[in-house]
Length: 218
Image (cartoon, rainbow, N blue to C red; front, side, top):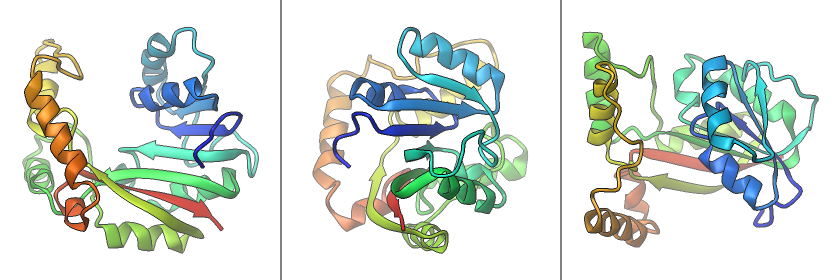
């Protein structure tokens, strides 16, 4: 699906709303659902006058009819559910036949995984309980719910994982760093150029912080 104009799109979990706004600019009919009033309040300041629908609700029981959406996507969400089944079942219910499900999750073979589990054991992890996936385990899970993966992708952390950790720690002391720092300049450009160069290589998927799948509902 390259043309999203007029397509009904749902982002599950408000996040930053950045991708939803981009899809709205491309003509998509975009909605965001989140269970947290605080998250939706933050998103309202970001979307401002954009025609994006914000809805408070549980991702495992969305307030939508069957086969409502052409695209459903979530990033950094699936890994926080002890059982991913209710979320994926609900994703399937609200998607039209042939619709696309897009999921981003942490990738297993990364230093982030070791660090995360170490800090969780110590009771110092800020992100709550979290699992991770390999390309194989993610595609098996998606197929089990009647989806066929049509594209697998990966992404390094933007910004870097250490910057994100420092940013989260400083927030505990009411010190707020920008979500996307601009001071790295040419170093950031080199980093992104290298990523784009490696993107088409299979090994790339075993170096990334997150992996994603685009899957079609059968």
